[in-house]
Amino acid sequence: MRIPTYDQFQRNASMISKGFDQMSRLEYQVSTGKKLMDSSDDPSLAFQIKSHEDYLNLLQSYGDNVHVAQNRASLLETSMQGLTSLGGDVEILLKKAQNGTLGDADRKALAEQLQGKLNNLFHLANTQDADGQYVYSGINATVPAYQQVNGSYQYQGSSSPLMINVSPNMDMLYGEAGNKIFDRIYSGNGTFSITAPSSNQGSAFLSPGTVNTANYVSDQYSIQFVTNSNGELAYQVTGVNTGQIIPAPPATTPQNAPVVTSGMGISFNGVSLTVQGQPVAGDSFQIQPSTSHNVFDLLQGAINVLKTPVTNQGNYNQLMSQTSAAFSQVLNQFTQRQAEIGTQAATIYDLQDSSKVNINNEEIALGKLENADMNAAVSALAQQSLILQATQESYMKMQDVLEKMMQLRS
Image (cartoon, rainbow, N blue to C red; front, side):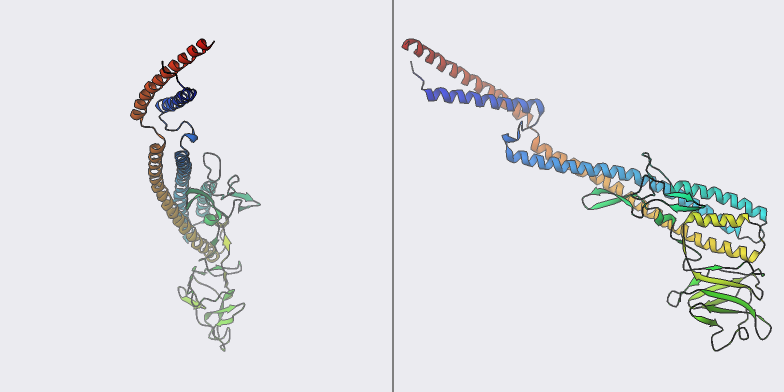
């Protein structure tokens, strides 16, 4: 009988312990499909798996943000389409209001239509998402973008837009700063505006005018209609800072003032405009740099004018001409922003596709690292079971021999 040594006995016991550990790992692989039961099994592989898991979580987070951004872009796009459509309706109504044959009742009816459009614009400006957030309030999304305060419309949101991160190097608009869309509407043609005093007696009004930027001199101008030395209806132009302009010094006013006729153009200091209707001596118009308003106050002003009986057709025409010119900026602003949001929506759709591809590729890469080869694992488990069985049998035989030796010695 061959007598085993103590070292042999210990080695066999250690082999059995390791065999059971290996069996546990293989059983884990077969039952879960994963390579590692514990990171200590293969620290290098565990580190790679953790790195890929972290990156996959990041990609999925971006993917979730892309989905959220897509929903918000769709809501913004729909609301901007509504705003642009309403803007077109308002522009048509404002042009109708300039028809000189309208009576007070006709103008009142137009005012009611414009009031309905204004209400709709106000409602769209306060568009909310499914969570009740105001999409045109910027980062201040919990409050309505616009509210009526003391008879005027005031922006309550933030001047900073709310952005959402959709990729490592890209943010997308999530909450628009509404004052960039509904405010910053400049009176008149956007550079200067024209007003007429209530004391005017003629039917004259001035076109919104155009600007030669290279020659434009910003000032407060007055155009006055006078009678010149020949007894003709004439005009003179002065500026608060630039002084007498027409007639050009050293000519004197009103003696040398040039004749004015309906439909004629007047140009000075980069300003060009046309006289419409028939002025009378003593009438005047003031031209001043444009001031900023919001679309709601602009329309409310037009509605108030339309509701008021007309006592001077020229002054009424001047007011409506200026409002119509200013509102053309609104429509341009709406149209431009709608196009920008549409472009962003298209970008988000592309991002969504690429996000799905990136997530799928990373899932495949992670799977290759962490997923076990099931055929190999099953085969290894069966083989390890046989090895462990043989090792256990050898151990048991050693144990029997040792027990017999102990009995003989006793």
